[in-house]
Image 1 (cartoon, rainbow, N blue to C red):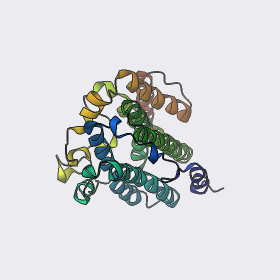
Image 2 (cartoon, helix red, strand yellow):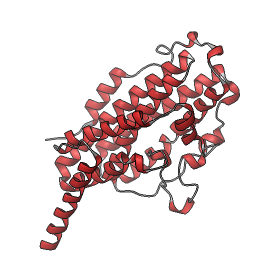
Image 3 (cartoon, helix red, strand yellow):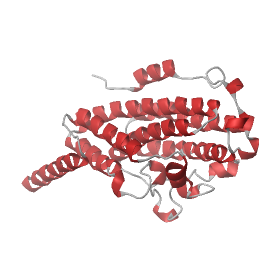
Image 4 (cartoon, rainbow, N blue to C red):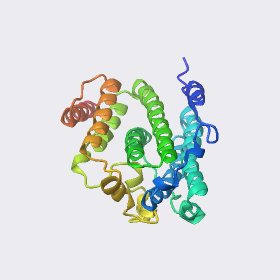
Length: 286
């Protein structure tokens, strides 16, 4: 029986896709409600969204064995690049002095080192959850109505992308068993342990090319490498309440996916250790 997910995902995401001309109230723009500070954050978000390009190249390279998932990348890549495009269109219409240059966009296109596909899948699943919350928070911080509407649309896309990744994770558990469970619980631990880290936990902030270190994160290649933390901490105020919602969502999804009950990161860690112990025992028995 075929387990291809791409055909149904294409259909469902196609039905919910928004149109850049029809579904954005460009005529409602209020220049008095957009500050220079706010407009500059739109530019930075447009550049970070452009980083879907190297991420897609990584996914296609590391998933040559999986044509179904690789086909799904056509949807994900299209919608993520559209996020960058709509933010740039907003700037083009209302703050053309801040439209990113081609050089600024190209700076975040660099090769990522090969990585295990299951771990990468979980990492991006968590990243979509986090982006959904970041953009919802950003929408509340902004005061100009058109950009608030745009961030709301993008946030909903990120939630749908997380749902699509989750379907591929469910398939991986059926096909790979404990290997998938171990990968998902290990990365889930990393991404849900945000209170232990001083930096934002998201794929844009992870080191992905050893030879380019320290300029091997998307964030490090932005016009202002310190921008992401400043945006989160000082501008949109993504505080512990918001962060707890991200952690809760990660734990809830892993609970459903792995058919366990993880109400805390500690419970997830115990599960991860039990899986590692089971794998070690099986290895010793061979």
